Length: 93
Image 1 (cartoon, rainbow, N blue to C red):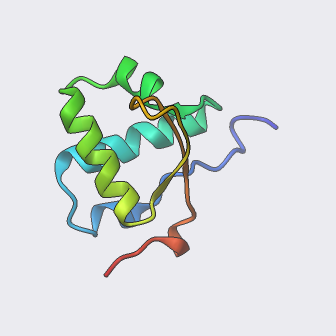
Image 2: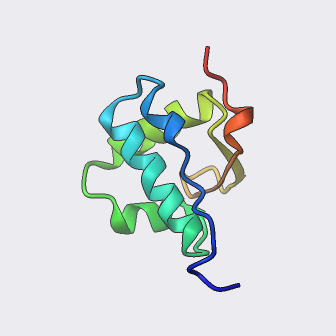
């Protein structure tokens, strides 16, 4: 598929939920990885994350609570792989 015709996965709803700046930033980084066909993993996120590991972890937890990302694999050592869900599956209330 031509990358010019490829739709991005980011949904504008993320800005209306009332998340912290960190949680929105984590979401945008997850979308960026997905758009570039790169695995959304703790390792890959940490390579591009510019804040603390704790802030990344907190942001991911916030996104998980709202069903925006799903943890699909974990080695129980904080090395996790995630996938983004469709915006119509997000828990907004």
